[in-house]
Image 1: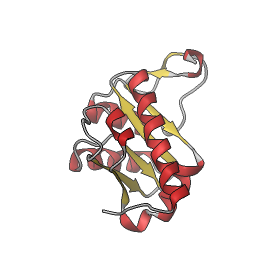
Image 2: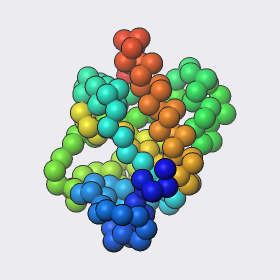
Image 3: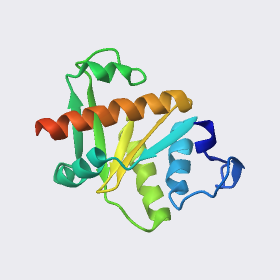
Length: 153
């Protein structure tokens, strides 16, 4: 698995790994800068793609009452309410990175956000924590999609 990661510096130059950063590297850097995250992960799962489209009218997805929430950093109870904002996607990565920065500043305590009809972004202090956040959030989005219950704000 370590060979699948690309480590970049603050200007999106490759430090470790093979390949080149995607255009979305600016979004990863906005998260790192805004939250001092040690790792950022992005998925294109069916569940995050579907829900980010169907729930966009609500501005995001509320997750609460699930035991799995306790796997998110700093969450101590299943009664926690996690908000996953949905940001409109754009091909202008500079503008989108600015909106990511604003969202992180305006909504402290987030563990992730969705890009409309695109996928999930989440982060952590290190790759292990970020991966755990991916697994928890993706699991919960699948639960919501399969059950047909995606609560709004």
